Image 1 (tube, rainbow, N blue to C red):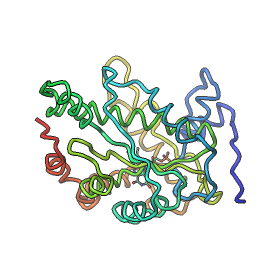
Image 2: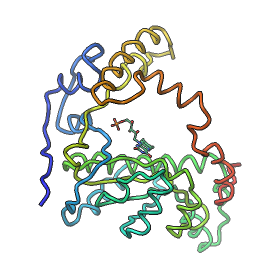
Image 3: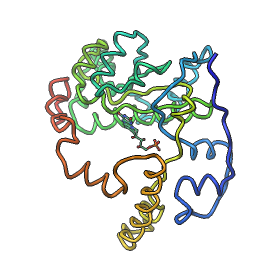
Length: 280
Ligand SMILES: Cc1cc2nc3c(=O)[nH]c(=O)nc-3n(C[C@H](O)[C@H](O)[C@H](O)COP(=O)(O)O)c2cc1C
């Protein structure tokens, strides 16, 4: 049987240093195992074939359903895709991300307004709130909060995950493959499993807190200096991982200054319209 990477719980200062780099580590505050588990998050793109303990899916979904949800409408669904043929197609849609075929558990998270429409139809009420952009946003937010609860739960169990936003490269094909009705949109996929030791990776540093936290008023003061600190930290991270692009700024520019990086997703509004979301 394949070996399983053990969970380690680093001290708060070591965990904060890993998350921010030594030069931007915030002071340690209250700490517990939940926060420690969150701070060791990393996306994993290689999985062991080890099957998950019985009931893992149900535990992850219970965690997902425990997330807050707008007005308790619970406007999301999730599709568990086990069929290797379907996984192969989903991996192709995602630009051949092999971990989609390899991971023991693959979930596609759906912004689901179709269920509300069915309920309204059954009860003879016109779903006047459905076609609005706000309602679509609610369903996407609900799906994302639920998925992230599942991620936190999985990681607390020593499992690893990676989101697959690349489902949105061709959401209509994903919808067709999974039998989604109109008004059901695949927001992203999620691979879950035990990390291959080689793929377990390292915590990826984040922007210094001063860049993302504003006190009373939104302020850009010090942003460039803090970004330079982060770029140095990320350049070091990239060197350790032999990644080509050195700094975070350069990666951002590659992403935001280049339409190719959108992978055709700039057409998402038209695709949403075709999938039953008028986005009024
Ligand atoms: C909504 C969403 C979609 C993502 N899509 C992909 C994806 O298609 N493929 C991939 O390898 N990683 C994907 N990621 C993972 C990000 O690249 C990763 O979270 C980011 O680089 C930070 O690294 P970390 O998660 O290891 O801290 C996605 C993350 C999010 C939140």
